[in-house]
Image (cartoon, rainbow over all chains, first blue to last red; front, side, top):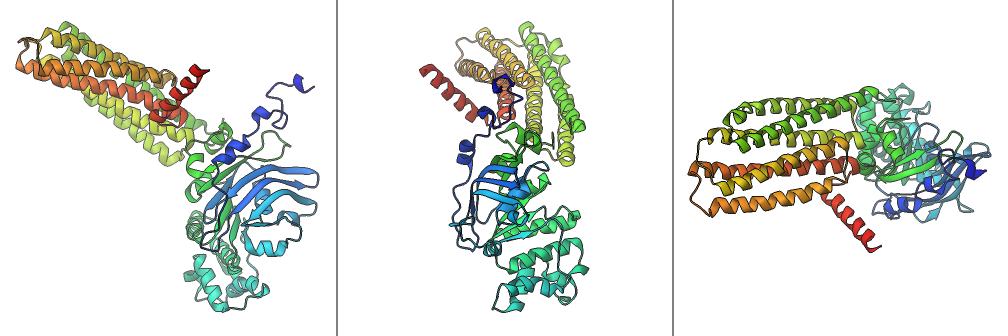
Length: 293
Length: 231
C-alpha cells in the first residue's frame, strides 16, 4: 500500500528521506546550556511531544535554549509554537486532556520528572501572554502580588521598583503606583505584566506574541526591554512578526506542519543570522521570505 | 503566490541587470573589433557610453534600496538584492574600463605599435570579453557549476598579463612609440581587471545560489570532487 503512494503523497513519518535531519540539525545547535554567572538558566529539550487528548500537536522537538539569549519561535498558525512554549513551564498540562512527553531540563532539573512541582517550575519559568492581563489592582499590587504569595520576605518597595525598572516602565508609573493597572495603555499594561513576571525572580521568561496587540511604538519599547532582559534572564518568544524575530533574537526555531492534521515539527533551528540569510531548508526559506504562511 | 508584486519587482531588476550586462558585453565586442582593425572610428563610437552605464547602475542601486526599505527582504531575496547591487558595480566598472581602452585605441590609432605586444593585447582582449560574457551567463542561468570554469579562464588571462607586462618592460624590439607603449601598459591592466570582474560576477552568483562565498564554495567543490576521484 505504502509503495503505491508517490513520494509527494507520503507523509514525513512515512518517508525518512523527507524528515528533518534531526541529528544534523542538532549538531548545528548551540552546545547544551550552561548556567552563567547570573541567575539565568538554559533549557535543554529532547524529543518533546505535546498532545491534546489523542491529538498530537507537536512531535519530537529537540533544541538547546541558551541562557542569557533570546530564542524566537516562528512558523505558520497551528504549527505548535505556543504549545511547545507552554510545555517549557508545564502550562500546557493546565488544559484538560493535554499532556507532554519527552525531556525538558531547566539547568540540571528535568521539569517533567516524577515529583517535580509545576508551581515551582512556573516560578522559575515566568510567562507573558499575548494580551496584557493586569489584575484589577493598583500598579504596585500588580507587581507585588506574585512575590507576596510566593512568600517574598525582602523589601517589597525595592522589589517593585526594580521590577518596574527592568520592564522599562518605572519612569512612566513611578508617580501613580497606587492607581489601577487597568488604566494604563496597552503597551504599558504589557510592560506591567512583564514587571509582574520579573518580580517573582524567574530564571527564564516565556513570551507568547507579547507585542501582537500593540502599536509600533509600544512594540519597540517591548523589544528594547527584551534586549535588556536577556542580560539577566533567558528569553523565549513566540512571534508571527518575522522582522521582530530577526531584530531581537539570537536563535530562531522554525516550526512547520507539512500536511493538515500532522503534528507540528521543529523544522529548523539555528542562529537567527543564519535563518534569515541562508536557511538550510526550503520550507524555512519560503516562510521567512513570505512565500507561504 | 504571495508577494507577487515583490517577486515581479525582483524579476524586473534581474532583467534590467542582464540587459545592462549585455550592453557592456557588446561594448567589449566593439573594443575587440576596434583593436583588431586599428579602427579609431569604431573605438570612438563607444566614447561616452560609460556615463550611460553609470546612470543605469545608479538607477538599479536606487531601486534595490527602495525594495529593501519597503519589502524587508530576507534569505534568498536578500541575497538576490545584495548580489544585484554587487553585480551592477562589476558591470559598470567593466564598462568604464572598456571606454578607457576604446579611448586609448582612438587616440593611438596613428602611433607605431609593437606587433608582439599587440598580439598579446589582442589575445587578452578576446579572453577578457569572453570571460565577462561567460560570467554574465553564469549569473543569468544561475549555473554555478560553470562558475568554476571562470577561474581557469582567469588563470590564462593572468598568464597573458604577466607576458604582456614583461613585453612592456623588456621589449624584444624597438617597435612601438612611447605613447602607444604607455597606453598598452594601461590597457593590459584594464583588461586584467575586466576579466576579474567577470570572475566576480560568477562568484557573486555562487553566493546567491548557495549562500556561500566563492572561495568557500570552490573549496567544497574541489573537496567533493577529490572524494569522487578517490571513489
